[in-house]
Image (cartoon, rainbow, N blue to C red):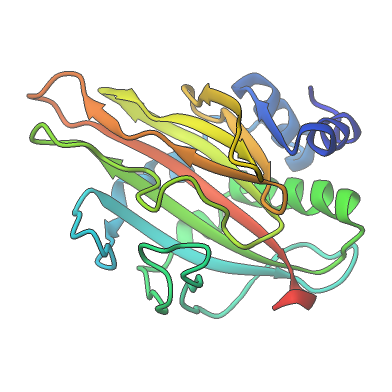
Length: 243
Protein backbone atom coordinates (compact mmCIF):
# COMPACT_ATOMS: atom_id res chain seq x y z
CA UNK A 1 0.00 0.00 0.00
CA UNK A 2 1.99 2.97 -1.26
CA UNK A 3 -0.67 5.47 -2.27
CA UNK A 4 -1.44 8.23 0.25
CA UNK A 5 -5.13 8.15 -0.57
CA UNK A 6 -5.31 4.40 0.07
CA UNK A 7 -3.42 4.79 3.33
CA UNK A 8 -5.74 7.58 4.45
CA UNK A 9 -8.78 5.43 3.66
CA UNK A 10 -7.33 2.45 5.52
CA UNK A 11 -6.43 4.50 8.57
CA UNK A 12 -9.82 6.21 8.61
CA UNK A 13 -11.52 2.81 8.49
CA UNK A 14 -9.66 1.07 11.34
CA UNK A 15 -7.94 3.97 13.20
CA UNK A 16 -4.60 2.14 12.99
CA UNK A 17 -2.59 0.77 10.10
CA UNK A 18 0.54 -1.39 9.77
CA UNK A 19 2.81 -0.55 6.83
CA UNK A 20 5.62 -2.98 6.11
CA UNK A 21 9.25 -2.12 5.38
CA UNK A 22 9.00 -2.40 1.59
CA UNK A 23 5.97 -0.12 1.34
CA UNK A 24 7.43 2.41 3.78
CA UNK A 25 10.68 2.64 1.83
CA UNK A 26 8.79 3.05 -1.44
CA UNK A 27 6.62 5.80 0.06
CA UNK A 28 9.55 7.70 1.55
CA UNK A 29 11.70 7.33 -1.57
CA UNK A 30 8.92 8.79 -3.71
CA UNK A 31 8.54 11.76 -1.35
CA UNK A 32 12.29 12.34 -1.07
CA UNK A 33 12.96 11.91 -4.78
CA UNK A 34 15.86 9.61 -3.92
CA UNK A 35 16.34 6.09 -2.51
CA UNK A 36 15.56 5.85 1.21
CA UNK A 37 16.39 2.90 3.43
CA UNK A 38 20.18 2.82 3.79
CA UNK A 39 20.69 6.20 5.46
CA UNK A 40 23.63 5.35 7.75
CA UNK A 41 23.53 8.73 9.52
CA UNK A 42 19.85 8.28 10.31
CA UNK A 43 20.17 4.69 11.54
CA UNK A 44 23.41 5.17 13.48
CA UNK A 45 22.04 8.06 15.52
CA UNK A 46 20.25 5.57 17.81
CA UNK A 47 23.68 4.58 19.12
CA UNK A 48 24.09 8.05 20.64
CA UNK A 49 20.97 8.40 22.79
CA UNK A 50 21.11 9.45 26.45
CA UNK A 51 19.58 8.01 29.59
CA UNK A 52 15.97 8.92 30.36
CA UNK A 53 16.21 10.19 33.95
CA UNK A 54 12.49 10.89 34.35
CA UNK A 55 11.33 7.29 34.89
CA UNK A 56 9.04 7.33 37.93
CA UNK A 57 9.36 3.54 38.22
CA UNK A 58 13.11 3.95 38.78
CA UNK A 59 13.88 2.06 35.57
CA UNK A 60 17.20 2.56 33.76
CA UNK A 61 16.16 0.66 30.65
CA UNK A 62 15.22 3.62 28.43
CA UNK A 63 17.41 5.98 26.41
CA UNK A 64 16.02 8.74 24.23
CA UNK A 65 16.34 12.08 22.45
CA UNK A 66 13.60 14.57 21.60
CA UNK A 67 12.84 17.48 19.27
CA UNK A 68 9.91 19.63 18.16
CA UNK A 69 8.85 20.69 14.67
CA UNK A 70 5.90 22.71 13.38
CA UNK A 71 3.85 23.18 10.25
CA UNK A 72 2.41 26.68 10.41
CA UNK A 73 0.14 26.71 7.37
CA UNK A 74 -1.10 24.57 4.49
CA UNK A 75 1.51 23.65 1.92
CA UNK A 76 4.41 24.43 4.21
CA UNK A 77 7.06 21.88 5.16
CA UNK A 78 7.78 21.06 8.77
CA UNK A 79 10.30 23.41 10.34
CA UNK A 80 12.49 22.71 13.35
CA UNK A 81 11.52 24.70 16.45
CA UNK A 82 13.68 25.96 19.33
CA UNK A 83 14.18 23.27 21.95
CA UNK A 84 11.33 22.82 24.39
CA UNK A 85 10.46 20.17 26.97
CA UNK A 86 8.03 17.32 26.49
CA UNK A 87 4.91 17.52 28.63
CA UNK A 88 1.96 15.18 29.14
CA UNK A 89 -0.79 15.41 31.73
CA UNK A 90 -1.25 12.57 34.19
CA UNK A 91 -4.52 11.79 32.38
CA UNK A 92 -2.48 10.56 29.42
CA UNK A 93 0.63 9.39 31.25
CA UNK A 94 -0.10 8.43 34.86
CA UNK A 95 3.47 7.19 35.38
CA UNK A 96 5.59 10.07 34.07
CA UNK A 97 3.08 12.82 33.35
CA UNK A 98 2.53 16.11 35.14
CA UNK A 99 6.12 17.33 34.81
CA UNK A 100 8.05 19.08 32.04
CA UNK A 101 10.69 16.59 30.86
CA UNK A 102 13.88 18.02 29.37
CA UNK A 103 15.28 15.14 27.35
CA UNK A 104 18.56 15.27 25.47
CA UNK A 105 17.94 17.03 22.14
CA UNK A 106 18.12 15.19 18.85
CA UNK A 107 21.52 15.69 17.23
CA UNK A 108 22.02 17.97 14.22
CA UNK A 109 23.04 15.22 11.81
CA UNK A 110 19.67 13.50 12.24
CA UNK A 111 17.84 16.77 11.58
CA UNK A 112 19.69 16.97 8.25
CA UNK A 113 18.75 13.42 7.24
CA UNK A 114 16.68 13.04 4.04
CA UNK A 115 14.96 10.07 5.72
CA UNK A 116 13.67 12.23 8.56
CA UNK A 117 12.59 14.95 6.14
CA UNK A 118 10.64 12.37 4.11
CA UNK A 119 8.95 10.98 7.23
CA UNK A 120 7.88 14.46 8.36
CA UNK A 121 6.53 15.29 4.91
CA UNK A 122 4.71 11.95 4.73
CA UNK A 123 2.94 12.62 8.03
CA UNK A 124 2.18 16.21 7.07
CA UNK A 125 0.58 15.21 3.77
CA UNK A 126 -1.29 12.21 5.14
CA UNK A 127 -2.73 13.72 8.30
CA UNK A 128 -3.56 17.06 6.70
CA UNK A 129 -5.53 15.14 4.07
CA UNK A 130 -7.38 13.23 6.79
CA UNK A 131 -8.00 16.02 9.26
CA UNK A 132 -8.34 19.05 6.99
CA UNK A 133 -5.92 20.71 9.38
CA UNK A 134 -3.06 22.74 7.89
CA UNK A 135 -1.10 23.47 11.08
CA UNK A 136 0.68 20.89 13.24
CA UNK A 137 2.71 20.71 16.44
CA UNK A 138 5.07 17.78 15.84
CA UNK A 139 7.25 15.99 18.38
CA UNK A 140 10.01 13.49 17.58
CA UNK A 141 11.09 10.85 20.08
CA UNK A 142 14.05 8.55 19.52
CA UNK A 143 13.82 5.56 21.88
CA UNK A 144 16.10 2.70 22.79
CA UNK A 145 14.57 0.22 25.24
CA UNK A 146 17.09 -2.20 26.75
CA UNK A 147 16.63 -5.60 28.38
CA UNK A 148 19.50 -6.81 30.54
CA UNK A 149 20.43 -8.83 33.63
CA UNK A 150 17.32 -10.98 33.33
CA UNK A 151 15.00 -7.98 33.60
CA UNK A 152 12.39 -6.69 31.20
CA UNK A 153 12.59 -3.56 29.12
CA UNK A 154 9.27 -1.71 28.92
CA UNK A 155 8.60 0.21 25.68
CA UNK A 156 5.41 1.64 27.20
CA UNK A 157 5.91 1.61 30.98
CA UNK A 158 2.74 3.67 31.45
CA UNK A 159 0.76 0.78 29.95
CA UNK A 160 -1.73 0.89 27.12
CA UNK A 161 -2.39 4.58 26.56
CA UNK A 162 -3.13 7.51 24.30
CA UNK A 163 -0.57 10.28 23.83
CA UNK A 164 -2.98 13.22 23.88
CA UNK A 165 -2.31 14.11 20.24
CA UNK A 166 -4.15 13.57 16.95
CA UNK A 167 -1.95 11.05 15.14
CA UNK A 168 1.12 8.93 15.89
CA UNK A 169 3.73 7.36 13.61
CA UNK A 170 5.95 4.62 15.04
CA UNK A 171 8.88 3.48 12.88
CA UNK A 172 10.94 0.41 13.73
CA UNK A 173 14.67 1.06 13.55
CA UNK A 174 16.25 -2.09 14.99
CA UNK A 175 15.56 -5.16 17.14
CA UNK A 176 18.59 -6.86 18.68
CA UNK A 177 18.50 -10.12 20.68
CA UNK A 178 14.98 -9.67 22.05
CA UNK A 179 11.72 -11.54 22.43
CA UNK A 180 8.29 -9.89 22.33
CA UNK A 181 7.79 -6.15 21.96
CA UNK A 182 4.44 -6.65 20.22
CA UNK A 183 2.34 -3.60 19.40
CA UNK A 184 -1.20 -3.79 20.78
CA UNK A 185 -4.19 -1.63 19.81
CA UNK A 186 -7.34 -1.25 21.92
CA UNK A 187 -10.54 0.60 21.13
CA UNK A 188 -12.03 3.17 23.48
CA UNK A 189 -13.97 0.39 25.24
CA UNK A 190 -10.63 -1.31 26.02
CA UNK A 191 -11.21 -4.18 23.61
CA UNK A 192 -8.15 -5.56 21.82
CA UNK A 193 -8.57 -4.80 18.11
CA UNK A 194 -5.03 -5.33 16.81
CA UNK A 195 -1.74 -7.00 17.72
CA UNK A 196 1.34 -7.29 15.52
CA UNK A 197 5.13 -7.05 15.60
CA UNK A 198 7.31 -4.35 14.09
CA UNK A 199 10.27 -6.55 13.12
CA UNK A 200 12.26 -4.96 10.31
CA UNK A 201 13.79 -1.52 9.92
CA UNK A 202 11.11 0.81 8.50
CA UNK A 203 8.16 -1.35 9.46
CA UNK A 204 5.69 1.33 10.55
CA UNK A 205 2.38 1.73 12.36
CA UNK A 206 0.04 4.71 12.04
CA UNK A 207 -2.37 5.44 14.90
CA UNK A 208 -5.37 7.74 15.24
CA UNK A 209 -4.69 8.74 18.85
CA UNK A 210 -8.16 10.26 19.24
CA UNK A 211 -9.88 6.91 18.64
CA UNK A 212 -7.65 4.08 19.92
CA UNK A 213 -5.20 3.22 22.66
CA UNK A 214 -1.82 1.67 21.89
CA UNK A 215 0.92 -0.09 23.80
CA UNK A 216 3.90 -2.42 23.40
CA UNK A 217 4.53 -5.58 25.41
CA UNK A 218 7.77 -5.79 27.47
CA UNK A 219 10.92 -7.14 25.86
CA UNK A 220 13.31 -9.77 27.24
CA UNK A 221 16.80 -10.93 26.27
CA UNK A 222 17.24 -14.05 24.17
CA UNK A 223 20.98 -14.51 24.79
CA UNK A 224 21.76 -13.31 28.34
CA UNK A 225 25.40 -12.70 27.42
CA UNK A 226 24.65 -10.25 24.59
CA UNK A 227 23.16 -6.77 24.59
CA UNK A 228 19.44 -6.62 23.85
CA UNK A 229 17.42 -3.60 22.76
CA UNK A 230 14.56 -2.21 20.67
CA UNK A 231 15.02 1.07 18.76
CA UNK A 232 12.09 3.07 17.38
CA UNK A 233 11.23 6.56 16.20
CA UNK A 234 7.92 8.00 17.40
CA UNK A 235 6.49 11.08 15.66
CA UNK A 236 3.34 12.71 17.02
CA UNK A 237 1.12 15.25 15.24
CA UNK A 238 -1.20 17.56 17.19
CA UNK A 239 -3.43 20.34 15.86
CA UNK A 240 -1.64 23.58 16.75
CA UNK A 241 -4.99 25.26 17.42
CA UNK A 242 -5.52 22.80 20.29
CA UNK A 243 -2.30 23.74 22.13
